[in-house]
Every structure is written in structure tokens, then in C-alpha cells.
Length: 521
Image (cartoon, rainbow, N blue to C red; front, side):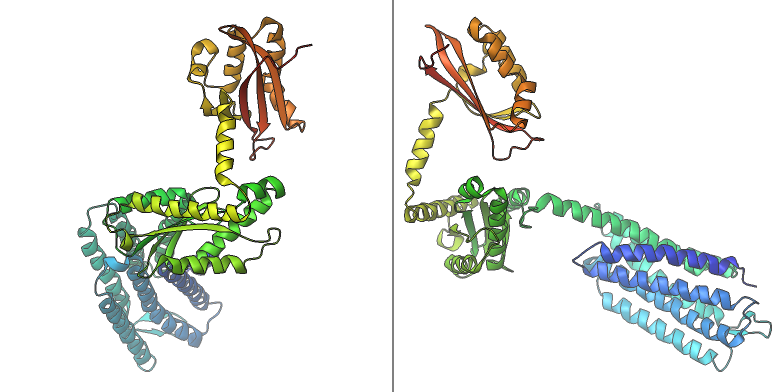
């Protein structure tokens, strides 16, 4: 007699499997063969548990329909072997190249399934596997154990091929085979219990446990894949990021360079000006649009990396000329239209291994960068901008300052951009935190006594944080500083950086000796 718990247990498994199945369908946008096979297996096992539930209900005395029970029992015997085949297909897909001659296993599985169907068909006319008594009881017939063992021939076959493949491995990949072994062991062990305790749904229990085991490994794989993607993908453009670029270039350095390799160096023209005049949202639109244009131009041929704010690198294996891709990319930019940005302009340089046979990877990159910068100079010449003059003017301005720092008031930290080496002496208050450095300098005797209180108040980090949060964009602090000839007038200026926010107070600090040009009241 079938216990009432039989179908109740099955229902609980259906609910859990349905939750896992839903997660399998919403977890990924892009499916691998393993994902598809996993979905099919979960769907089938869920269906099997449903069929087993209906069988458990039909086998109760309350229902008492021999014909229904006979039909369900026939379907049950076919579905057990079908489940074993779904198990087999999933394992072959999961292990992929680790298993040779996989088609042979599929043929054997199909032959066993065909034999099971023949047995069930014969049983419909002559009881050979089972029969249903007048008391609505399932009665075992002589070939019942043959039908029962058929499915386990497939499971044992999976176990043997997994063991053979595992023995050939000596690294971490053995864990993959261990998960498959546990995955197969669950229905085998529970099948043995089904023979001993037919009043409980041990078939469903085994399939359920097996699916849970493989779900743990699949979920772990998905999590690892997501971490890898997050660590190697630029979130703004979906191109590969600098981490991926550096890792891939390490591999290239350790391997011979193919003659068809072409490296592209690409830079967005006018991005900083766009950020300064139109805002970072428009600048982001330019970056995203540039990434789309580059990806479209090199679709299926190259690997695109965003290696800086406005910089992209592309690695291509192509027998033709690099100018073909440059033309495609220019065409892509001409057809691009943003919501706020009107157009995209890119400076493009490339270097071909076929034309530089003795060049190293670094040589190719330098050549690509050189062409790109030449292209950029040409772009600004057509715009009437003297790029060289800009750089010379910038260098002259920087050299007029004794100290330039990138400061973060929020984290109380700094990075040195330019500094007079003497400024790092402890006698000038040098310290690891910007707040300590500024205060120590004031207390070191370097500030004129009449200016000290004002200096300490205005360089206090709490004062500065509140000052800039109140909407101020810059501050100038004037004081007299000790020198070998007495005291010189000095200006300390702080400006908000482009990435400044009230929760990330990023600033630039400039220090300049202005001689005697300041008149103190």
C-alpha cells in the first residue's frame, strides 16, 4: 500500500525544483550549452516529480481506478529511463571535451530507452513488468527488475566514463568530476532504497538530491563567471577593462606573436573639453558611443579594451591592411548620433606585425600610439588649436609651482603630482595624511607668527570639508613662509577636481612662491 506521504513529498520537491528552475531561467542573459542542458534536465525532473505525484495519488484506495494506475505506471517506467538519458546528456555537455566518443554513450542510452519502451508495450498486452490487482495494488511481474535495472546501466556507464576521465587529471579540474560523481550517485543509491521501500518516492528523492548537488556547482560556476566578468569588463562600455588588457598582454609577451597581429590605439578627441563645458553626463555619452562604434567596427575580429578615460586598445588578427578597420571605424562614427553629444571624433593609430617583423609587442604598441598622436595633432590643427603650444604652456605653469597634489579631503589622503624634493623633509612637516602634513608644516616654524593662526584655521581639514560642501569651488590661503632671506609671500590654492562630490571630496592643491606681490593689511 502506498503511503500518503508519497505524493506529499513529491509535491514539496516540485515546489523547490520550480524555484531552482526559475532561477536557472532568470540568472543569465547569455546561455552556454551547459546552461541549456541544465535547464532541460531541471524541467524534466520537475515533470517526473509531477508524474510521480499523480501516480502516488492514483495508487491510493481513495482514487481506486485500475486503468489510470496502469497508464501512469507504464509512463513511469518509460520516464525513469528517459530521466537517465537526460542525466547522461547533461553530464556529456558538462564535461564536454573531457569525454571522448560521447556519441557512443548517446547511442547506448537511446538503445536502452528503446528497449524499455518495447518492454512497456509488451506489458500492455501480457503482464511482464507489472500488473494492477482488483484491490488497486501494483503487482511485480517477472521482468520488473529488468525494467528497473535498465536505467541504472546508464548511470553506471556515466560513473565509469567519469572515473576514467578523472584518473587522467591531476589538477583542480578533478573537482568537476567529483561533482558529477556525486550527481550520479544520488539516483543510484535512492534507486536501491526504492526496491526496499516501494511505498516511498525514492526515485524522486534521488533525482531531487542530484539536481540540488549539481545546482550548487552550477551556481558556484555562475558566481565565479560573474566575478570574472566584473573584474575584466568596463562597466560603462562593456568592453574589456585595463585589468583584462594587462593580463592578455602578459600572455602575448610569453608567446610568439602571429604575423597577422594588428594593434590599434584609439583616443576620443575633445573629451575633457566636453566634460568641462557640457558636463560628465555628455562625456559619458561620448565614451559609451565610442565603445559602441569601436565594437561594431571590430565585431567578430578583434578584442576591444578601454584602458583609460578616453583611451581604447584593440587587438586584431587580420591578414589584410589595418586601414580597412580604420575606414570601418570612421564610418561608424559618422553614422553615430547621441542624445546630447552631436558627434564623435576619434584619433586612430595602428601597427601591423607583418610590416614590422622584428618588432616586439611593446614596439607595436609604441608605433600604434605614435600614429594615434599624429592623428590627434592633425585633428586639433584643423580645429585651429596648437596642441604643442598647449603642452608647453601647461608645463610652464606646472614648473611655476613648488607643490602640486591630488588631495582627497574625505579620506584625508593625497597623491603627489609634482613637488620640490625638499618639501618631503620632516622639518617641513611631511606626513602620510594631508591634514597632518598641513598642520605639522604650520607648527614647524615655517609660517610667520602673525600668519600662523589664520593658516592653521584655514588648513584645518574639518573647515575645508565644510567650506567646499557649502558650494565653494576654490580657496586661496596667503601667508609668509620662512626662507634663507627671511620670509617670502606664498599662495596655497585648492580647487575642486572633475570627480569631486560631497561624499568624495577630490581636490587639487597648488603651492606657489609669489615673492613680495601680496600686500598685507
